[in-house]
Amino acid sequence: MRVGTPGFVPERLVEARAARRVQSMKELALILGVSPSSVSRWETGKQAPEADALTELAKALRVRREFFLRPVYDSPRPMFYRKLVSTLKRDREYQTSQVSWLHEISHVLQHYVDFPELDIPDVLGGSSYSQLRDEDIEDIAGELRSHWQLGEGPCTNVVAVLEKIGCVVGSIEMGTSKLDGVCSWSKSEDRPHILLASDKMNLPRRQMDAAHELGHAVLHRNVSAKALRDDLPEIERQAFRFASAFLMPQTTYVPEVPNYSLAGLLSLKERWRVSVKAQIKRLVDLEIIPQDHATQLYKTYSAKGWNRQEPMDKEWAVPKPRMLHDALCLIVDSGTRSKEDLLSVEFTMHPGDIENLVNLPSGWFSKKTGDVVSLTLKTDAARETGAPAGGSVIPFSRRES
Image (tube, rainbow, N blue to C red; front, side):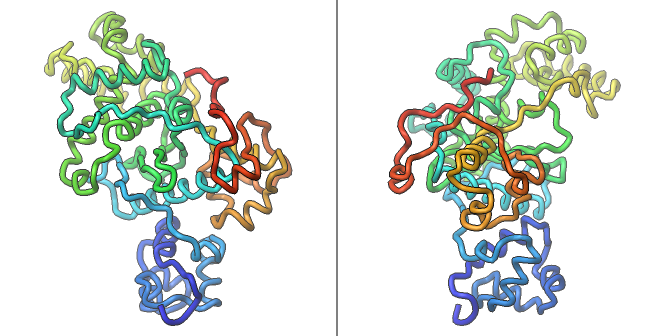
């Protein structure tokens, strides 16, 4: 780039446009009142916008000017999308932008606060996901429940488990029913960042979505972008099998099934917090019931209108991520950084975007106080060296999983 603002990062413009669901360079050009060719040169890196144009870009896309001068938060590993084939390109791009912003928020907060150390054992031992049999996935799910001391009964808050083992989790409305969740490993910290959809959400769906993304983090950590494109159905099937085994262990869930009817499965839903539909699939996968019996159950299920909403779906609160929320509150309440400092120095996104991704109430940045929480701040020396504050920090020890 020979002219314009020094240090302008073209990829950040692409990211911001996706975050605002501005579908094309032409549409952005109309918003700015410039030629489409100007926007094209900015996005391709052939030319950087002048200072005035950069100010207008920041205003139109609701970010700080500095946003365009900082590097993107990408990863050499692919993102694992749910329902990738049927999802519109603009929705995937929006989700990608939000995951990048989740990475950025996490990176900023870890400058001040120690997150739990990542605790995801290498369950493949150098083998490829393509060598996994269903029995292997069942064993892996059971071994991890034991490793994380979850027991063999119902796990009623998978989101809390994810955060306890060191995953960064965010949750936002995606604006479409075709996006359920995404898992992406960070480049700088090498830890999973998981973004869950909250559209039309209920507890059983949140449980399955979270366990599904955990399956990707556990089984598909080293999958290449090419393998993901070429073998997406099998990769998704494995993640779902892991999630089902994790939520409904064969050794404890199956013996509790009173009978293979909708009424019987509904009675188990209250205890195991898993949808009736997911239970039917689990029993088929384990060859407990034949496919023709499952088909009849699905027909009755549909006739009852349960495809829209199952009984008990509205009775339970949906678990929300807490780690990033608690970290921000700790930083502010301890006086380490004021909200104004964070917005003017650390973050380049709109405060509403941060509040959304971090599960803070709308307008939190404009309020004077935050919640008192129980994370551990890094010392000044630790922040300078990147060293931990001392000891593992488990901010969710008070939570039941």
